[in-house]
Amino acid sequence: MRFDKRCKLIIKSEQKPRYDADLGKMVGGETTEKVVPANIGPVSAQLQNLLGDKLKEATKVVRVRRIKGKISSLLIDGQPYNIVRTPEHTNGMTVFYVSEVKNGV
Image (cartoon, rainbow, N blue to C red; front, side):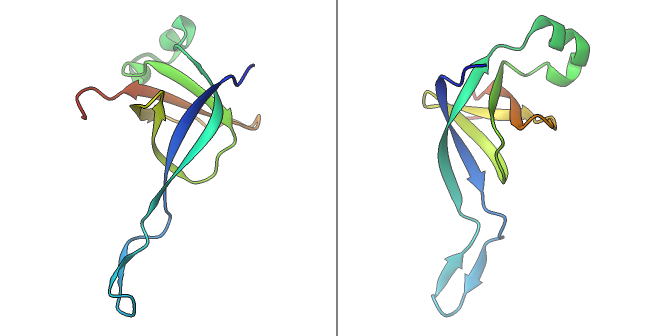
């Protein structure tokens, strides 16, 4: 499997935002962006038949090497995608079933 494409992961901080009286501003809850190599492809017909309605919205399958943290969304070629499902895999990979965001929704 070739990881020849790149995607940008939007990772939410585990820490909830809170007010810091010493600094006089809100701290925590930041998001970070990380560009990672990925294998991006369409959802196969076999997988669509197997999972049925659970993947009705999914348009692509994005495979990356194991990622830690809460991924809220990702960007492929600058286009935002929402994560529909993230199944657990034990083979050292993280898989995202994603759908394209249309008109910012």
